[in-house]
Image 1 (tube, rainbow, N blue to C red):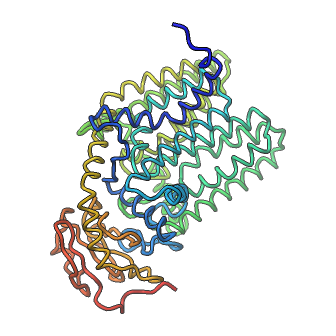
Image 2: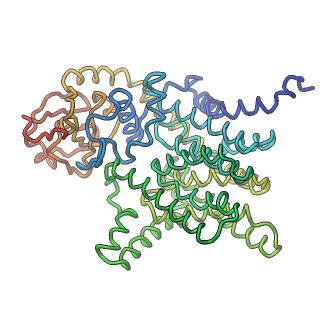
Image 3: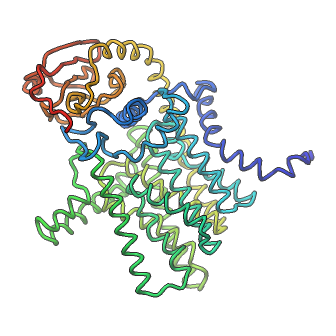
Length: 517
């Protein structure tokens, strides 16, 4: 059967269009496979992270920013009212929601759109031929973690899209000898990513490997450029910090607290704390954790971590082989940086469970795959795809479970909207009074949060620790709260409303509500 001439002439254009549509096509396929039809918009956020992201996006779309403080145990951002990740992840979502309307499924669809745009732009920036575009599409299809978070309301889709886009700019600059157009495109993306997420460090060294080292730069100037860039990146992270609420969910120390320990408790103790954090995270790659398949979710992540271990060993053996044979080590060194460097650096910079570890490590995996495509390392790429195939049976079943839960959440939205309308008549936004618009939330963060009127800030009182400055207090009856333990926190609040999910209390009087200065 001959291919029509029109397809031969426009083969690359068709493949580029498929790259843009691929996240949507994959999403539709998974929806149909799970028996949910072609309607990928029939989803709603259902877990705590997704709900927080959705509520802050909806508040920003309606009021420019949340009118109350999102935070934990009474914490809040020094500047602004956003939660743990600050203001900077929200502009793309808010802009598109204002253009097309804010829906319960908006963040899900926007994640698909951003990933599609990133795949398209990467293909153009890296000047991929038809075969490499197909390899790029295959690498997406066999990336279960990327697909899992593309269908959620979280911000991983945005982070993955920026990783792909920055990698495309780096390749263009490397090949075209620093053309200004590409440099001016990279710098904004690089700075946005720096204030958006800690993942930026995976690009810090490659930026200079591909840009600074390509030019004939003296050692002094190179060192100065590195120092300035590091300071700019640190400034971006500091900006992110002052616009973010302190995240106290795990109670674990983070790298900033370790660095503070350098000054308060001594340099040696600070180093010990950082190394301990790294040890505890790297221990998740141990044999006992890698067989942690107590359910489909952890099964998927355990298999994925096991795959990363195999890749690290494979890269080490390949590097030794090429070194002995005196072959080109460029792609091997970059691959080692993106996997080994990221694993060790992430271990020192962040502390959490397998879920957070895997979805962040996936940024490095994405860039690794792109580098292999660019450097035409087909054998390593196919080995990586082969490893990924082993994750498909359990990961795609888990993704179907995710879809099923999001569909259930969507089906409950009619009841949630009714309760939202009732609470909107009881709870009114007070302009310029952040604490009066803040809710002390006791119990799990669940779909019941969506009953709260848009604009209010939810301060998650973990371990029943709260702050009596908040204008409202809500108990999630389905969240396993022991009302005896929090009876002291109810002092000064009067009961306003109760339904099957929530008990709503209002601060009696305004004496403890602190107006915005």
